Amino acid sequence: MQDRLATTTAQWQDQQLEKSIQTAQANMAQSQRDARDELIKAFNAERKANKGKWVQFNGEFWGSPVAIKSYDTWIQVATFNGMCDSGPMDCTVKAMNEWLTRFLWM
Image: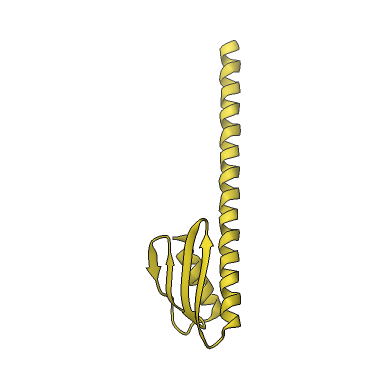
């Protein structure tokens, strides 16, 4: 009986630990999404303030520098976490933001 109770208690503790880990992972993922969204929001504010001009935007996402050179909705060069890429030309703001979201999530 005592062994069975110890096993049940250990299983319950394992389940609680697993739930805590899942909650922490979900919170971290949400925090990353929030930080990414804030970076994109700041980039868009800079872009809107400089319509018709080249923009050099520098920010940080989870401790890593992000650099973006753009003209209107065209991201000519984006660098982050050792990656370098460019976005679609003459696209909608929505398409640009979706591309940037994917780029930052790689």
